Image (cartoon, rainbow, N blue to C red):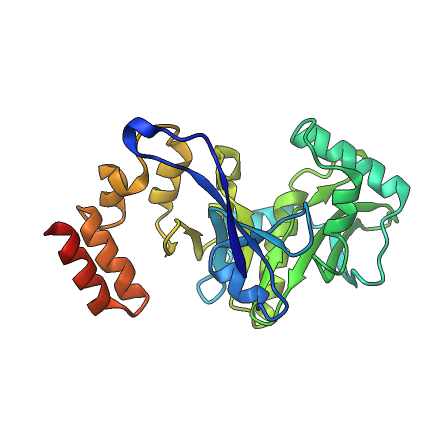
Length: 275
């Protein structure tokens, strides 16, 4: 992966210089490895990835909860089939209700028809979950997913507004997770968690998020980040360091280096900084 950076507004007084980290996928890159490093595929351009607060389910730790089972019971009339994205083409009528769904749930955002089609293309997804109601030929919902050797990336669910299928969105994500687990995959990547409305993803056991340095299974730490709108960066945020189980940035760097198998090198670096 070739990395490059897009600068955001700096705060010179606190020596904070934010950059969006982008990655350009190269021919020999393993997409599963890119996901494990916290990168997510962009719908803007094929081969373009971005570093973000990615959220995933460790499928070795996932167990359906009573709430998950309640969702299934509530949406019993619905079932899914699986289709290859290489053989599926979005019709104009389907594109129309997809656009309406985006407007109803997210608002007028810059997701073009071309971007929706790109998500469903074999370049970005290879499998489509198609949901219908019993005795109804209409499509109630669709989910494009990228299935890799060791993981699955869940792009986003599209629900047909005309069906008014309450609870189906949660059911679609739950069934995709269970399908991935039964298929022997290690992780199911579910996008990002930046807003309180995205915390529903923590209802699935085995959740963890990329905190910029490692995969973190503390949902308390994730909730803190969702509510954090200002203040210092995380290395200088005492509350965050406490949630990370350390008291200083130096301790955090040691933990990080240990997790990467470079404990000795990190110790020398931290010591030189403190001297």
